[in-house]
Length: 131
Image (cartoon, rainbow, N blue to C red):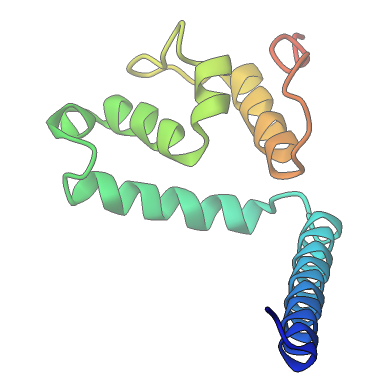
């Protein structure tokens, strides 16, 4: 049979455990809500920095030989590294070719990265910069 003291101890440790769980839940919730509020669009500087990191990874061979086979292959791989969902949306069906400068798709890609950085839908990006 359980004594009165034993029941009180179990009750208090259970209550303490519940309080701890609630505090952990509250802290996690606050951290997550701050992360959502703190979202900001990716800056040109951040894009440039990340792209340089992608180029470095390609040069180290982390993306395979194919990505080092030509300048345009390197650029296509860097775009995939930079933002794969945007690459798949804008370039996957028609990758950049040697000597090609596609300003429209370049703008779409930047716009896609902007929306991606904010956690927004990527719907309607392709074709949004047709001149």
